[in-house]
Image (cartoon, rainbow, N blue to C red):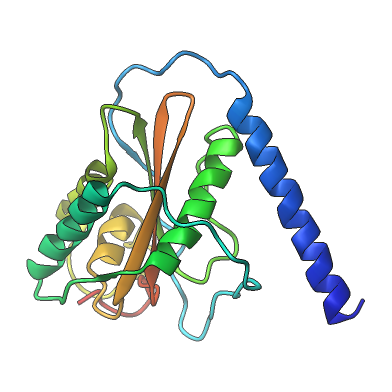
Length: 206
């Protein structure tokens, strides 16, 4: 199969996924879940030195649907968290936000099955909580809460898991991020992507 056929096949697959997502959005779901503790998803597996995540073919994505006040709040929360360890704030990227929005929509259309995007060109933090009770900034608060579990030093195969969301937030080499959000069966899903990705095994976050 030549490149043109491959690209056409990928576009056809994307169209099918979007159609399925639209159908899922119309289906009725169970009643809204009661307010429950916030649920950060297991951090994305750390990057090993020399391992570069695969880059997906370029597809024009719709912009993030996260409201401006939520964008300002989650950006400010990241900036405060990074300032505490002497790391520069992150720049909000509309392109990365659109990428994150696509995955948030996919998770919502797939029955709120929380899992990381494979493959992913960026670092990624995910969050799920009761819609209307939790907002975008609560996702950042949940990730920052892992700070108490980080003991300092370089990341290893054994110590990254407990604080991987936090270490991605404060990773010195990361300079830009963007987030998207979606709802599913009364739940809010927040997905944030980070560029360049953090959590490199054998390196310290700051």
